[in-house]
Length: 188
Image 1 (cartoon, rainbow, N blue to C red):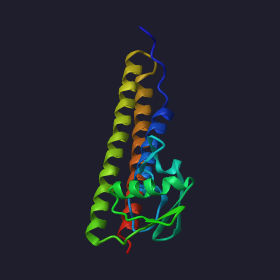
Image 2: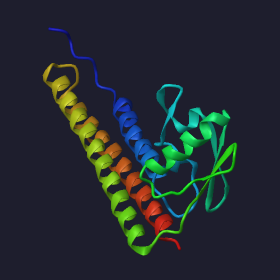
Image 3: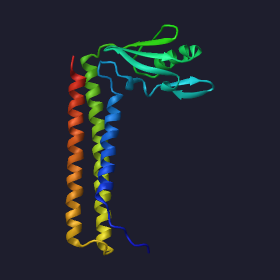
Image 4: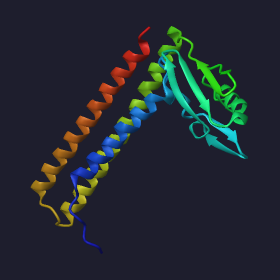
């Protein structure tokens, strides 16, 4: 049987940081009533015989607070880009300008804002679960290392406390990100 290596707390912190980063990435795709290029990232376009992400056929920008603009590089792709944005189920109605597709961002209704806040809460809870799973993995690894004689019982206790501290910090950052996103969504 292979000897167990001494567990590194930094590895667990890194995994927790990735969960927080993933949450912020998910939040960028939530509409807030303001134009955000991340809103169009999930859009896939039929181009050149395959399905590709929108950002591979044009540059996405937010020239105004309530307008997105997609500068398409190949004129033949303007109509497929327009169709893809319509079909993406984002509730957006793009306008074709020849080489550019303009996407006005309609203001959100109160009901829609509440739905987005709920969705943001769901995303946050998923990442909290991911962080807790990292904590569980860390604690299991520490128990195994102690059982295999790689670390002492005192060291296991100390490292478990560090893992818990890292977990608390990650969950606090998730809660702060959620609170900020909720405020951003609910702003009129």
